[in-house]
Amino acid sequence: MTGYPTRIEFATAAEIIRDVAGKRMLKAERVPVTRASGRVLAEAITSPIALPPFDNSRMDGFAFAHGSLSAEGPMALRLAGEQFAGLLQDLDVAPGECVRITTGAPLPRGTDTVAIKEDCVEEGVVVRVPAGIAAGADVRRRGEDVRAGVLVLEEGCLLTPARASLAAALGVASLAVTQRPTVAVFTTGDELVEPGLPLAPGQIYNSNRELLMALLRAEGLEPTAWPSLPDDPERMTTMLTDAATAFDVVITCGGVSAGEKDHLPGLLAEHGRIHFWKVRMKPGMPVLFGEMDRALFLGLPGNPVSVLATFLTLGRELLDGLQRRREPRPQWKAVLGAPWKKQHERLEFLRGRLDSTPDGRLQAMPNTADASHQLRAAADSNALIVFPEGAHDYRAGDVVDVIGC
Image (cartoon, rainbow, N blue to C red; front, side, top):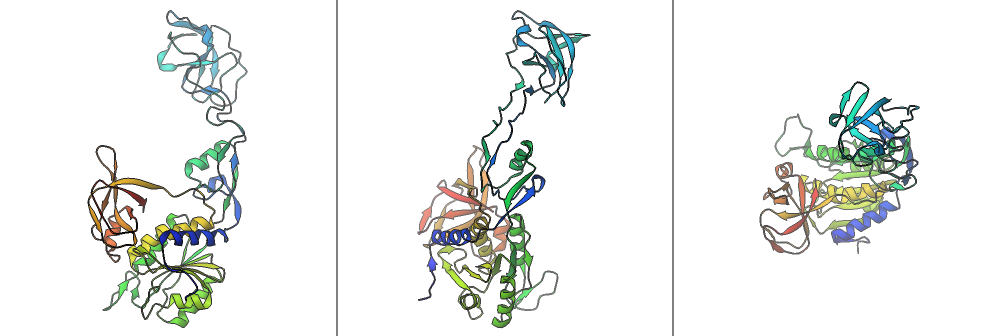
């Protein structure tokens, strides 16, 4: 017995990560609303005011009392003043009068309707407005967007630019958000060479580091790239234990399978704890999850497409759990653009392109270069097509789940 789950279903692995991350959720901190976009909200927001906070004009034009209009033709109204966006002027508009008004300006007392400027004719201090204008036309009513005292942003939601803007519109100066996890990134292998240096026979460039760093930055994080782990257990242990004392998350790629140089499962079992090793997924089966010291440990396989697939699925699950994110990641239904023969039992995340068809449907086109080392296929793709467990022949037109890359 290993003492930890191995070769488990993907859903079980995701559940284990959610459970472990839920017990390690990071603390909240307050940040200015100007810096909150991209963070996870740690408290619900109830609107302190109404939006709009006052009745105002939707257009540039003339504000007046609708009762001043005649149903039979254009009406001549006396221009009694002007109200621009800003402080409400001390104006009382009598029946038969109007005021010039700009978009967003508050309605003066005695007015309830706006005539659009382009539809009116000005003749000195007289404004002719057309007949047939509905009562309340082109007026934004107080609270028609948001009523005061209602829930507008839920705890655990991602603060998109629009959500941060909504908070600012409500006058919220700062927001409680979950701290961002600190992440250490390691690649493994004596064969790795940094881009720009010459390659000796048997060496490859270290592309996985850039892949992982870019994926983490896309999540709004500021990861730290450590030197590559050598294929030496003692030096590897020293570097990993140092990182585990200082970071919330340690992510490695490579060294997690069953080869002679795959030391990470043994090191984590000896110096930390393994929560699971190996998941019935393709690509990325040897993925390793555990903890060491203060850090949660996610060991990804070494093939670049496996790194991409395991991070976008299990890696995001870990980051979301630590940051208390409750809303699910976007996922779409699309029709398969070409047939695909799935000959294995594992859950598969296949590279492909998600596009729209001329008739308005979402279509997922599989990339036929499906080996886990073929990085070009990942570079040509913008989505992962999800094929459930079990061998199956899929036809063009079948509906599949799709995850954005």
